[in-house]
Image (cartoon, rainbow, N blue to C red; front, side):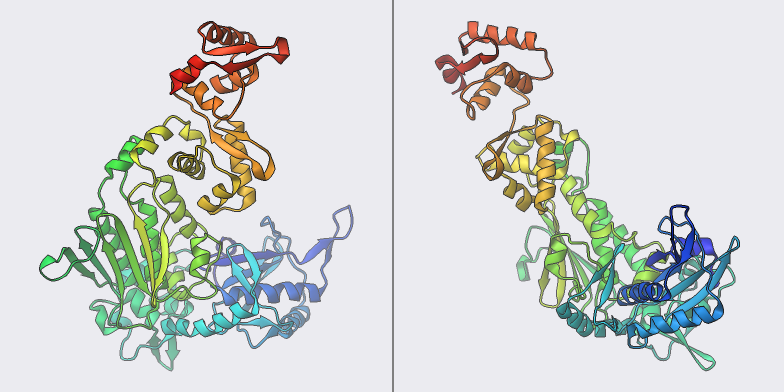
Length: 555
C-alpha cells in the first residue's frame, strides 16, 4: 500500500475503517503497557472477517478511538506471531494485506481486506458482519442465506473475453485515476487491477464485467444486453394499451454506469413538476418529489441490481400520481425488504466493487445517509414514505406525490408552530384531526411513525412541554389532545371543556400564553361577567365552569 498515512486514516477508497489500540493504561499515571497478543489477535480477526463479509475495509493497529496515533512496538518476529495467531482464529483462508507504516517516530500496522465472495466465520463458529459503524453477529439462518446469495456477487468479477483497455472510456478512467487516495503515478491499467476490476494473465490484462459496466465505451450491448435504464411516462394513474394507450414517453439510456446515473438524473429533472399542493403547504415552490429521495433510489437501482439477469434491465415509470423505480434482483442477504421498510440500519452490496468505484467517482453518497434520508425527505415534504416491495424477482420503490394531509387538515395544521415540531409530530397531529377522535395514544404514535416506544415517549413529551398537546390520563390510559392555537376564546374554551369539568387560573395561563396570575384573573373575571363562565370557590380553590351560554355559543 503506497497511499499516504493521512489518506489512509480518512478511509481512502475503502468503505470501512476501524482503529485499535495496541496498548492499555496500566495505572493512574497513564503508563501504557502492551496488550496481550492473543487479545489483539482476536480484535484483528473479528474486524477482518466482519469487513470481508461486508464491503472490505482497513484496520489500523496503534491508533486510538479518537484518531490519536499511539503506535505499536512489535518486532518482526512478534508481528509474525500475531499474524499466525490471527489466522488460527479465522475459519478458512481469508486473504488480507498487512503493512507497518512509520509516522512521526511511531509505527502503526495497517490490515486491509477486500470484500469476499465466500462468507467467512471465526473458528468459534460466530460470524461477524460490518454494518455501518458497528460489528454485528449474524444468526445461522442469515449466514446460510448470505452464502446462497453470494453467488450473485460473482458476476461483477466475471472475465469478459475479447475486450481490452481500448474498449474503455479514457475520460472516465482518468476521472477514476484522479479519485481520493490514488497516487499520481498510477496508470489506468494499474488502478483497475488494484480495485479488483482487472487481472493480469501473463502479458495480457483481462477485464471483469464490473470494469466493462463502469467504463465501457458504448454500444454497451457488446458487454451486457440490458445494463441501461428504460424511462417510460404515462398520462393518468395506470398503464393502458391498444387504442387507449396512454404512454407518452419511452426512452432508453445506454451508458457506462457513472454516466448512466447522470443522464437519468438529467432527464427525470425535466419531467418532475412543481407541486401546487406542496406549495400551498409550505408557502414556497417545491418539486412534487424531493430530489434527494428519487436520486438515491436511482443510484441504488444501478449499483445494487443483479447484473447476472441479462434479459431485464432497470425500468422507471412515471404516472400522474407516482414514480416507480424497478430493478432486477431482490436485496442481497442479510437485507430484507421488511427491514428496509422499517428503516433498520443494515447494509449489504451485491456489487461491492462497482459500489466502491461509483463512490470514488462521486456518484454515491456517504454511507449511512441514503435510505434513512430518503424516507426523511419524503416525510419532511408531508408525502407518504417510499413503498418498498418485491414483484417476483424485481425490487420496486414507489414514490407518491399526493400529500398525506387533505386541504382542510393542512389548514388546521398551520395553526401550530410547525417550525418547532418534526415531521413525525406533524403527522400524528394531523392523523388525530383526520380521525375525528381529536386525540392520539402512545401506541398510535409508535405505529404510524414506525418508531420504537422510547422514541415515541420522548417526542410526545416534547409536544406536551411546548404546550402543543395536553395529556389526559396516566400510563397506558393516557390520551394526548392537540390544543387549539387559533380561534376565539369561546372556541378554545369549548375545546378545553370537552375534556375537563372545570378550569383554573393555572390552566387558563397554559392555554392562552405566558401571562401573569393577575392578568389571568382579570380575564377570567370578565368571562364570568359576560356569562360565559361560572365561578365557584375562593383563592386557590377557585374553579370556573362553563355556563349554558358558553355551551350554546359553542354549538
